[in-house]
Length: 474
Ligand SMILES: Cc1cc2nc3c(=O)[nH]c(=O)nc-3n(C[C@H](O)[C@H](O)[C@H](O)COP(=O)(O)OP(=O)(O)OC[C@H]3O[C@@H](n4cnc5c(N)ncnc54)[C@H](O)[C@@H]3O)c2cc1C
Image (cartoon, rainbow, N blue to C red; front, side, top):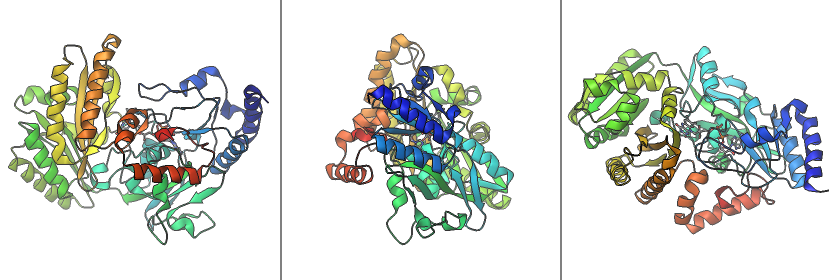
């Protein structure tokens, strides 16, 4: 059979699994699946399938294994690093967004088991109605971003200051492997029946198999379900913003608050330009403020929230900070997944999101300003946002994005973007998601033994290299 006949036969087979309406070979549809929200190009897949449950995913994988056809898993395709776009010809794309259900809530172990294609916004909304919250609430793109996409790409975002990123909040995942079998990780190793009571703990008994699949960018298996930690909704919530004369003093206060684990969330805007973009009213009211952060405290009791708020304020004042209002913290928390929408007006996004030690932020900000000056970004109508979020125990996600408004300025933007990424990796930064954005910078400086282990795991789990081939250049 030639390739066209192959695809016709495979389409018929997959349609018999998912239904005719959930498989497409329409060129326009395929073309849209060759892109994510990054500036990178991918190859059009041969076919897109939208399964409804884990059994259908397993059957599709078995069909692909039999035909030695590559598979690329996708969630909301909201990646901004080129992670979900196919790198090889004739791939079958599995779109998980029909798998969007809460499967069960365990209010004993305080976990929620979900299908992997549920979006963060839907999950938060449904949990809230039942009196629960998540720890990590999702990336800023959580209206489209799915749990499966975030676990595959190490997402960091809302709620990360207290709870870490997506992967820190998972107790168990269920993954369809390259041969179509399904593995259930964590304490669910024991139970042949995937009942809700089996997935209460991640670390137990054997190796942490969950971790092998986290951050794999969909290259080791197809996540069909996940169990995440949940918490009771907070009774005491405080919001407040602090303003600082410069980034150095703001970062010192940010660091001390994060070290002491005081905030549910702490988010910083690191220069005047960023304040103008996301909290412009503060610029006119407080012209001497050049760096701000917003803090959200969530506690089971209002008095505890008030005490923590006072403590954070005291720390901020020690470093020259002053209270300026609640706009940023409230916008960040109450409007989480719509907060950054206004930035699309600034043009197409060129990101450099990564994590780094908090103390290294001022040097990064200074270096970025040198790059902006050298390439006269403002003169060329290239705007930017420079933000940071506390993450987990004590590091930060640095979020510098350049915005391309005028396509003619693309070469200037790309030169500055490249210099910034080189500096970020060189000076203590590591990407959390990788994709086409970071691979050329991360792989050349990766430890050879580390890469060797990664390749061996891939070879063992997917000997025919069928799942998302060429991710991490494998
Ligand atoms: C406006 C906006 C704001 C954003 N803010 C943030 C942010 O704050 N923090 C952050 O980390 N990211 C952010 N992102 C990027 C993106 O939203 C996240 O990385 C998100 O987690 C991607 O989820 P997704 O469902 O869209 O995954 P996709 O983009 O579809 O896929 C991401 C990766 O996961 C793999 N994958 C997807 N589903 C599965 C599955 N079921 N099984 C196996 N592999 C799978 C894909 O192959 C791909 O490699 C933002 C994006 C936008 C557009």
